[in-house]
Length: 155
Image (cartoon, rainbow, N blue to C red; front, side, top):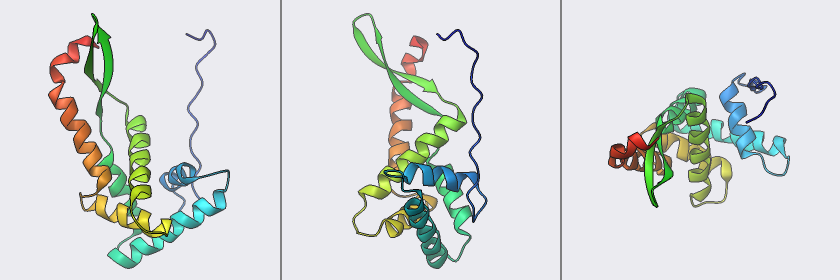
């Protein structure tokens, strides 16, 4: 444990076009090899595709997608008396949102196709409609947490 003071959490700055922190979080997770302009191009292309496909505000579709994937409980391996248990653990909303963004991006990268903007837009639309790989991952995690609720006292 550190003897120094705790650091304050840094607040993400909003992106230049939509003025939203969620968009900036997504851009920072898409970012590869420091090419932020490419990450912005991918995300803004996905936003245009979402607007064309759904005729809705792409920011609200993106928010809804992240909200659908966000969860508040997870399981963590805990070793007690020589055997390993999957223990139910509640997580903070910021950590849940970070994991939701990560799962959304992993799911869109696994989709077939060549254009990353199209893959991201269609995964976001699917998740907003409550089907897609990221939603399946969340449901699987919740199912595992429900199955191991009996081991919650090992926290």
